[in-house]
Image 1 (cartoon, rainbow, N blue to C red):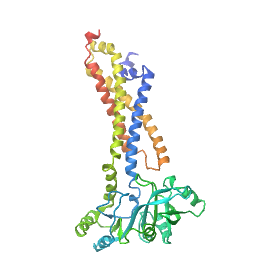
Image 2: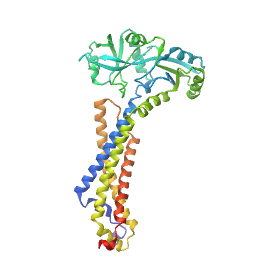
Image 3: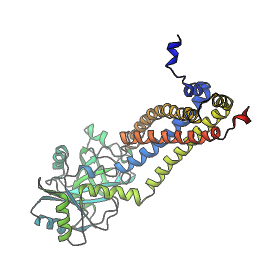
Length: 389
């Protein structure tokens, strides 16, 4: 049977790790906890950024006009509507849609408590969304005082969707004005708005009479199919006054996400949380590997005395770190999937696993374990076989 063992290597790294199952389980639990923490922090951060543009993605527009004074979707400033009309002078502009945008006080018809909701007002005959289903429902808004309620809004606004599906007449008040829900839409909440509603321009101005009728917050511009949005954007920027900002649709979404990323502490807080998870994992893995190396110094010294190179023994420790990384990542990934589902159900935020985040956390765990392995190897490098014996 000697021929059978001649081509095989002894899995020394694996045997060292599994020699004490309890210690291995504790180490894997610590690594998994660090991985879960990184998954949740990065998931919350990306989910909040994605949630900030759930409505923006649905707009049927190639270019978007906003005021330079606008900061975000919850702090939109107005600009003259005639600026949007002036874009029609460009030969490649096919159509426009003026949009009123602002937060209003919604009264929960069940609890009578008020809560801010994001309202969008537009002409029901204008193309507004990229989906035909949403555009067809817009026809229900032609009657004054009618709204479409976002059924993905948080439950604090009341059981609006349930009542509507039961066939009940759903009415409530917005800023002291009576409105009726005539349909449900799927838009989604964001970090700045817990709920959304759609209404006509006429109803919107009735709900907020202080807004000048000649002012709008967002202007959607649709171009011809062969038009280059970047070129048209640049032409409009040269022609229009500085009281309006011309963006591509992607630029409008980037504008919103950049506000939450750079002008608030959200990005820093969640990135710091992920970094803390990385540090915690490094400490746990380092303690495990350092203890393992310290306990087996006589064995390592014996191998060195037998002629094994130091680099070979260091490879043993590195492989231990690699095994810990893979075994710790798998439960962290599965737990992350479950927690993402729980967060989506509880908060209605679009928090979910994606390939980029899964690979990012895997790389971070690998780096965490490799860095800890290199630090633990210093104990082996500094060891003197003569002193050990």
